[in-house]
Amino acid sequence: MKIDIERISKIYSRPKKADHVVLKDVSFSIEAGDFVVILGESGCGKTTLLNLLAGLELPTSGAIHVDGQKIEGIHPSRSILFQQPALIPWLNVKENVSYGCKIRGDIKELDYRVNQFLEIMGLAGFSQSKPSQLSLGMAQRVCLARALVGHPRALLLDEPFASLDTFTQAHIQEELVNLWLSEQFTAVFVTHDIDEAIRLGTKIILLGGDPANITDIFKINEDYPRDRNHKRFKEIRVKILDRFKNAYLAKRSLV
Ligand SMILES: Nc1ncnc2c1ncn2[C@@H]1O[C@H](COP(=O)(O)OP(=O)(O)O)[C@@H](O)[C@H]1O
Ligand SMILES: [Mg+2]
Image 1 (spheres, rainbow, N blue to C red):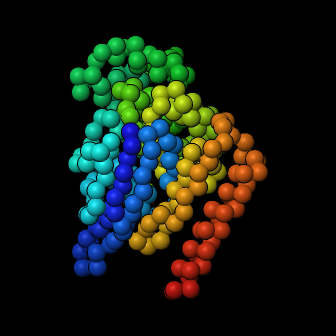
Image 2: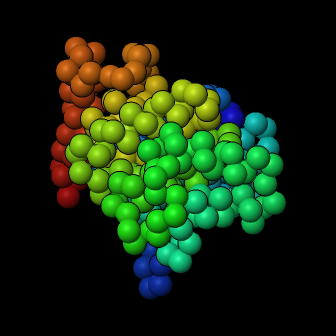
């Protein structure tokens, strides 16, 4: 899925205060099959941007096109994974994974697809478990299986692994990359974690400023799984930290 973001701005109005311009004139393109990471500090507007790509919100001005069609709301071809696993507590794992497809009437080979994803995610033995019986990492795996079982063309991820411990994070990051390589969806992954960005992305887009805009783009062609001590990654890490430091100093000198 090719995604074109064309001069979008997002402004929130606030009672008794000036309007809050979160994003201003942001433009960039995401090629089909890319793994794009949007990296920025907390509060800079990453979730706002991802919600616009999902169609959960609409831009105040500008437009987003997917394969030439303007986004005017949510669509099952673009799946979303949030920071916290949001599962239906009274349904078991298998029912949770199949729920969205069932509601939409997308039931062709659904049982086979659900079992396949539960197997890939190492959840086959937990298909009858309720969400309350799962660890956070397992619950997020269920959400990932649910997000992919309908074979979306794009997967939008909003800091989905931020609450997981380092080890679980490393495993699930690798599983996500393997799924992306085999399923060939376009991935847009929001994070504030530089190492996570370097481990995952074919392209890292830095978001910063107030209102936020793109401050830099890094392309990474290295194979997976990636070694975080690779020379190229060290260089990119230093460059990204430099950009953030400069932006921080510039902001402080204005105060
Ligand atoms: N629905 C909303 N109404 C008003 N302000 C919002 C809304 N959503 C986000 N914001 C504001 O937009 C800014 C960016 O928020 P967000 O996109 O959540 O940042 P991030 O995900 O990078 O932490 C914040 O200052 C936040 O308060
Ligand atoms: Mg956010």
